[in-house]
Length: 98
Image 1: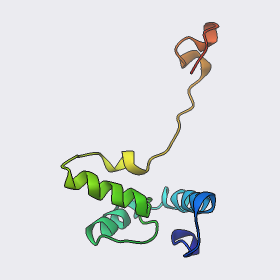
Image 2: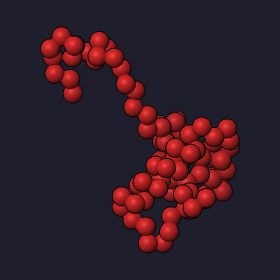
Image 3: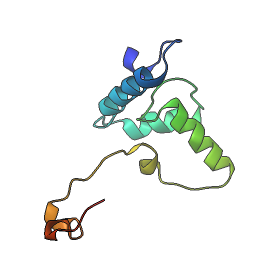
Image 4: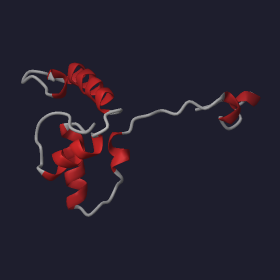
């Protein structure tokens, strides 16, 4: 349970590592959407809820107040897709990939 809430003196890399660990726990959870929605509805201030950090929820609130609409998946999905070299836009033919 401690992984979902930060100690008062936690900063920087330690906080990032803990939040990453909490997100990994959240990812396969069958109630992720309900947990996230609850945190957004009640304006939960602290902790990782439904894969969203305190900062994620603040950003979403600011965007919402400005009238921006962005799918929730883009807020907390940080998955990098690994394509085979043949699908990298020419990297396999001697071109440099970015």
